[in-house]
Length: 146
Image 1 (cartoon, rainbow, N blue to C red):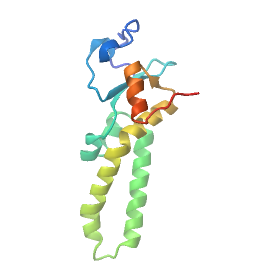
Image 2: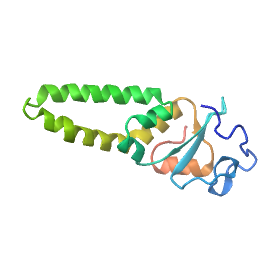
Image 3: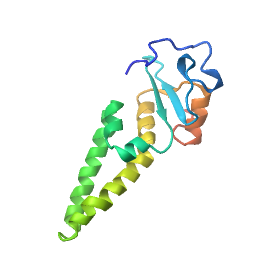
Image 4: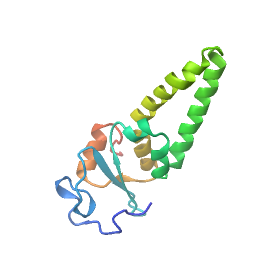
């Protein structure tokens, strides 16, 4: 994904005063990361992902986060196979219609944003400004490289 602000980042200002690129305000729980090699920038929420809780797996598709989409789908398929093997047939409908989807939604809502940021960091992204770095460190999404 290219820079959503079409290269108009204010590099001299370094996104001061908690503002995002090009002076756009960012909510306090959003962090900006940038890949220094390519200039690509991503802005995402830190914390619980309500979109992943309510509409899985659409956030992964909209962010073009194919790696995490495949990980999530493989884990859900594996969990479904285990449940089918362990739960008696007469109770299977209850588990598949209520308990499993709720548990999966809570799990992915809780950890998806962390998975997204950690994958970006493996791809070479770094926090774009001091506020984002502090936010990511406080949430334990990112640690200072040594």
